[in-house]
Length: 459
Image 1 (cartoon, helix red, strand yellow):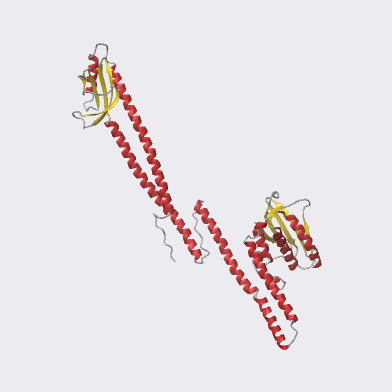
Image 2 (spheres, rainbow, N blue to C red; image 1 turned 90 degrees about the horizontal axis):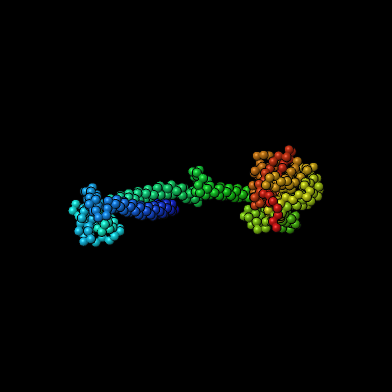
């Protein structure tokens, strides 16, 4: 089924970008409104200061019982404003104009606002005025608000166009960013579709900038790598099971056919039944081992993990298998530093089984006279468990393969076993976060299991 790609407007990246753009524009509008209010207040304050200063200069020209200088000053200032952006009025107590370019009437003392209707002045032009008494007369100085209003209009227009520009830029930038993110999400979706259709080699492309999408994509790719490895392992296991169990099943069938023939002729079939029982037990043991490995890989035993001394496990295995090795013409020794404890976090039973499998593997495939040695040491933050022998060893090209389920070396085909011992060892090591390597012991083989160390046992 073909997946429908969501439209840009419905995509999560674009919606997020649009949300951030809206918040950014909102913040810009709010900050602009605050700046406008501060500027408007500052202009009004400066205008009042200019009016008051002009009023004071004109008023200072008055001397007691001498109005001529005051009248002259008012008329001179009025003449300097032919377009009447500044108004001056001097009236007597009866309201008659003594000087100026307009007659102020009904204005209270102090600052006030009024709309003037004067020749040559646009109707309803607003003025800011200051009125006071000078020598018994009323002096009014008024400045037009046209210049201030024009400046505020310019600021508002600039702010409006800036808001539109920023809004468009934010939406366009959000769309571009959303498209980039959407392409990457489409890449993830396409990869998942490929994987769902069985193409397990598909991987999410990385751009290498280390962002969160790259980090998540890398984790998904790692999960896909593991999934691919598990599927390949399952395929290989299935093939190995079909190949390696075919022989015992064929032997079991032949034994049963021989027993049936003997029963038909009245002969004793006890030998055939014994052989058939042995073959069936071997097959059951193989499947039991496969199930144990699957359970371990699923992490079902982690609930039983505790802090324990791996040295005690090594010492116990050494004691248990020392006599077995001696009876088989080999020697087994455990070398530990007296009084030293090597704490790790794990399941004691699984660790015992892991070391037992390694020892049994060495006993099974090494000739008489072989010396096997167990030891535990610490290196930095790792506890190293060694199983060494001076036997024939394993060829370097085969060392990774022996951990595969049911894989057996050609030289081991004639010896008893299912080829699952080292697979179980690997599963236990992985469950404990440990790494396992096979190295030359010159001669022989050295198996090294590196566990994460615990500084001290949990209380």
